[in-house]
Length: 408
Image (tube, rainbow, N blue to C red; front, side, top):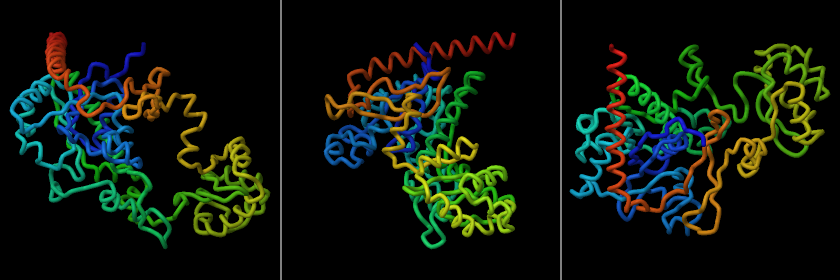
């Protein structure tokens, strides 16, 4: 049996919908025990979100199922005295507290950062919000599309005629969740060395800008503002989406040798010596004419044929797939990327969920259990609190002993 890197780590998860649940899903895949604290009778809003109305009515919407496998669900009302007491018992035994309320909400409930640190000095407390917990926008509401617009992502998506356009999936939510999972993991490593917890404040806006690569760095470094180029790569040409006999094909001939090989393989070697395309910057300036010539040549054969031939010649190329086709690629099956679980809302039916693309010592980790029904683990609440408290005391003693040994 493989040991997961975060085995033994206990995460108390107060988050809803996507950024926070995506973060705790990543931690769960790596071995953490994640307990979702949900509002009694309502639960995570994602339970009612997704394309299947019947699943939404049953509290197991597709949006919830996608991010919450392998977790436990407790219903707790933090306005109720008994539930608050149990919550605090869980807090004292938790390694991580994760929340994605607006700035100040948890503090108004009586659980500000200072009090949390008193309850559990070893706690890694992570907040995910649209703009962070400081600054003039700290209390502004934010959803993925709001962040896409404010980060400049939409301004560089589409063509000069169609921009701004929304990116076709909630990239800012997932980016915020990934950044939070990374920050939590580093804070846990720091705690292992020092025994001290941490307060982590993750801004989705800043996390999103940090992932935008050359669109941001070209402006910061060179003062050149990015422009929308549809399916083309602004850093090189020919590099983008092209048209074959039966469908689109992405080609990234970013190096001179790749460009020359592409011209020869597609039957247009004359483009190599054409002064408009002789070197990188010229090709970028004359991108439209170059693409037109290549599209005419590529139209002679199917995309799959070109993909095989170009890749064999060292030219990165691949068909543009639909999401269903992408998920059925043999490469993903080989690496056990998709896990099949029992469907919590449809007994007898399978539920397929994705992993994270990481192999640890050659092993892909999927969820060990399906997403929980609302309050599915309510009967275990007292046992969970006792077990977590015992584990926390043991870990604290171990850290203290390690520190004393290092100091001697």
